[in-house]
Structures are given as C-alpha cells and as structure tokens.
Amino acid sequence: MLRQFASAAFALAAMAGSALAQGWQPSKPVEFIVTAGAGGGTDIFARTVQAAIQKGNLLSQPIIVQIKGGGSGAEGYTYTKSAEGDAHKIIFGTHNMYALPLAAKVAFSHKDFTPISAMAFDEFLIWVKADSPIKDTKGWIEAVKAKGGQWKMAGAQSKDSDELVTKLLEKEVGAKIIYVPFKSGGEADVQLSGGHVDSHVNNPAESIGNWKAGKVRPLCVFNPNPLAKGPKVTETQSWSDIPTCKSQGTKLDGFWQPRIASLPAKVPAEALAFWQGVFKKVAESAEWKSYIERSAQSSRALMGGDLAKFVDEDYARFQGVFKEQGWLAQ
Image (cartoon, rainbow, N blue to C red):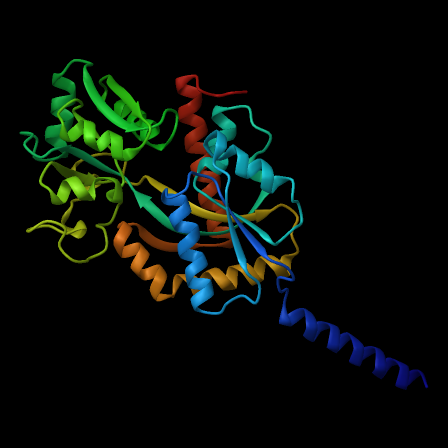
C-alpha cells in the first residue's frame, strides 16, 4: 500500500513538473505601456513588437498599447510599479528607467521592475553641418578648443542622453561646450542644418533626412565597432562607412540608448521566462529586422545577467556624471 501511495505521489509530482515546464501563459489582455509620446521612438518600438507578436501568433491574448509618457516617462513607470506581480503589463522605455530617479524626485527606482530584454540600442554620432570645414573627429576636437568655450552642441532635452554624452566629451576635450537643449533630436537637427549651433549628437534616425539631403554630415559613431552594413544612405555612404570615434582618437568608445522592455517587480519566474521566449522570437522576425534597418539601430538582445550587468554599469555612469554636474535630485 505504501509503495502504491509513493508511486501515486511520484506520478502527481511528475504531472506538476510537466505542467510547470509548459510554463506560464497570459490569461487576460496584455498591456504595453509606452513611456513617451505617441509616434515617438519608444511608441514605434512597442508597436513593432506588437506587430511581430500578432503576425507570428505568439500570444493567445490581445495586446493593448497605452501611452503614458507624462513626466518624461514617470507616469508610465509609476503606473507599472503599482502592478507589482502582474505579468500582464509590460513597460517599454529606455535608460529613463534608471536616469529619471537620479534627476528628479519620482515614486520609483529601476529596482521596482523586472527587465525582460534590451532589444535594440540607439547609436550616438557627432554631426556637423555639411559644409563645415571639419573633416574628422580630431578636427572637431581642435575646433572646440579653438572656440574658447563658445562651442554650441545641440541635443534633445536636458539632463538626458544628449547632454550626458556632451559632458563626457567636454571632460575629455578639456574645453567648455555650451549645451543647447531642444524638445527633440529633430529640432536639434534643424538648428544644426540652419547653422544656429556648431554640432549635435543625434541618433541616426533623427538626422537621416538631412543627411540624405546634404545638409548635415556625421563625423563618427560612439561604438567600438562600425555599424552594420546596409544600403547607401547618400550617394557614397552607408551607416557602416562612418568611422568609430575610438578609431579617431576619442576615449569615449561606446555610448548607447537601450530600448528596454520590463515587467513589474515580483512576477513569477515562469512568467519572466515566457516573455523572454516571446521577445527572442520577436528579435528573429521579419518585422523586427525591417525596423532595425529603417532606424539604423543596433540589434543585440540582452537578457538575464548580461542585461543586469549593462543596467548596473550604465546606471553608475549616469550617476557619476549627474553627481559631477550637481544634477542629483536626492
């Protein structure tokens, strides 16, 4: 009898293990929460993932996209934090997840979320006006120094990526750079093409139009490796033809804006594993590959320990610069 009971118990345990191995599945509609305005880069990121999931039939539940970009994304993060343990809410953002709590008093920290994947990375480049006499990064550094603290660098918003990379460059060059913030990278590019500023550090997608039109020109990209090969953007150059800043003598060899999808804190481990599997399939889809090519981002999915390491290192870099500049909110 005891042997029969043990056998039955073993069978039940095996069945439970099998059920667990099948994993967690969404049981109600899934919310994609966007921490930026409609039509912006984060919104496009979320909707590309949505399209890939729907076309690939990766979910049995519908997806509802919610725009909660108020307070530079704080609205979305605060909303998602309140859904602790609910794996039916996925928040889409960038490093604003850990930069915002440094710069402003908000009701969350990046420890309040469970990152699923950093799906893509926006590159940063130094751009000058197309008719500028500056031909390379060495010439740009010399021009900044020669202007005696009057060099104007445009960027999108204050105390964010563009100003951060400007401050890192300022420290390396050893000369004052006046940072001029605008509402978007598109506005910064208009100011550069009009000759109202001396340079900017836009992402590729923000300046591709004026590059094609012959109004602005990239000098280098903050990536230790050249960008992926692709079709020509201008008559003579593609993104892969742009030299790396490191190859032209800068110590700042890498600077990216990650596009991160996260769950609330304390979600079941099997739910995280489920979503990681979904995002891996998204990264292999035709929709995702088309998105990466159009936006000239770098596609490299970071998950688990690799993603945690990246977030910790990037957070430390932001924290260091914010402290030096007196930007810390605490």
